[in-house]
Image (cartoon, rainbow, N blue to C red):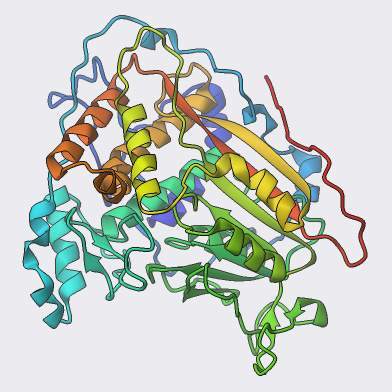
Length: 480
């Protein structure tokens, strides 16, 4: 079973499992299985592991049952958006996690800096990225399933992880197979957070052209294309780590969102072209017919842009009148719901990442700023939704508990890779980074740690031609 099919199968009956309060047990097969319990598997003081998203993005025939397009407005009549999760009210803690317990540790993630010893001379080997990726897998104890996509232009960083080679240094996180596993897991995490919704922008018709900026492993773009067969979806990224599409209406390309947006209209696609989908070129000498998009999607791009305003302007100029833009972002501030828990490693990690990014000239605490930025760029009907995100399965509510289980695994797999470049730029030596990562992983596994953060969904609409523009306050303040 492929990873994508496991995700789909899990989502089909997730509501029933959550309502029943059933714990999902880990699977033995597949990539990247990470045991988070004590060596004796007692699990007395630590959380059990979440299910593993195994397999990967193989090319398979799409399920015909997924071909029926459903508009967001039509879905509203059936069950509505996941508004119960849009809350600033801290959920109640599971009583079982309030008892006194000793911190049983949990070990550290292995230092893989030795992998960088191959040095620049390795570039003479055309299989450099493949061999480096195999070494990383061995060092991390990862068992590949053979379907991850290796980017041949990847470069090896001093963290011992592979990074994008195209515009080297623009993106702070790795792009190797282990990171691809985490990105797939993260896609499923967001499907839980949004109750299976890929987009919350209230589009009143199926978008003809869709752009997914920073598509990563491409799962969002693939899912959207399969759910909306009449859409043509383009996914862009600095790394070519996407699979061969399963349908003809999705295309992946290597691109930098801070460069000019010039996406030529396809000669033929499942989405018919029309004058409303054609943008005039910024360069009058260019004869290419550019796509104007009906919907532009960003997810977890808070660390990616030197100039977010430039990207917003690109998006505005590349949308049709009435087209929608949507950001699904994470805020960096971490809160603690258990006043008796003394740990602060996670907060020190996020603060260090912010300092390091700032030292490299980049503001990464942007989730709460996008609403105002969208309005300044000229968008209307701007809405911000704030969603509580437990960092481990400490809440009593079964849906929040399930989200916390997946977010904990997301952080266990990503804390080192996400933070390495930024923590280094903050002035931390490699041994200091390893020590901090070890503290963070220990805190995550501690049942007394009731930490949480917030994610934001912000969307807005480009005005129609001749529409009068105003900026009413439309921030959602959902409480439960």
